Amino acid sequence: MEHYRLYTLVDITDTGAPHSPYESIEYNQYQNLNVLVQTISLRAQPLDIQVICLLDQDTAKYDFGSSITGIHKIWSMDFYSERETAWIEHDDPLGGLLNDIDGQAFNGNLLNTMVFDCHMFKSHDINKNVTFKKLNNQ
Image 1 (cartoon, one colour):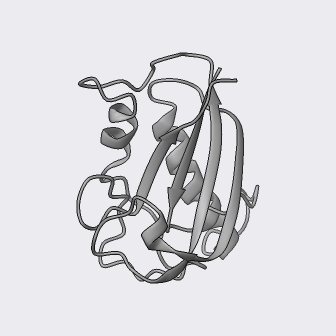
Image 2 (cartoon, rainbow, N blue to C red):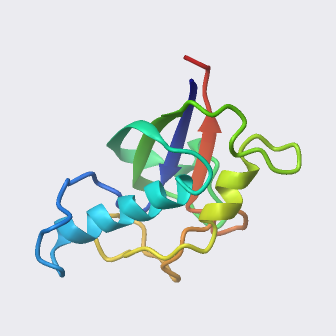
């Protein structure tokens, strides 16, 4: 099994609330997480998904875009895959994840501390708000 970790400034709190009122914060947090899970699932099924919110994080310690600075909440999502090399693209073991998620829409008006000009996951430019790491195999 391969272990991956995602970091994002987007509120992806795992509320487990797919049937909450449509306009509720909990519903939209869950939908943001759902966008990530469904996009990751295009190539392989993510397993044992764990989401936590890290408070008061210096964005300089993460691989976000150069336009993102300061202290913010950051969400971390760990997951595993049984399919080794599922997201390799052009010799980049994370290339598929980065390309698939780039441009996917999210709701940015939740409990995130970052104000977004554009409500899309960005994984490639100065506005990069989501990043992935491949961790040690399990």
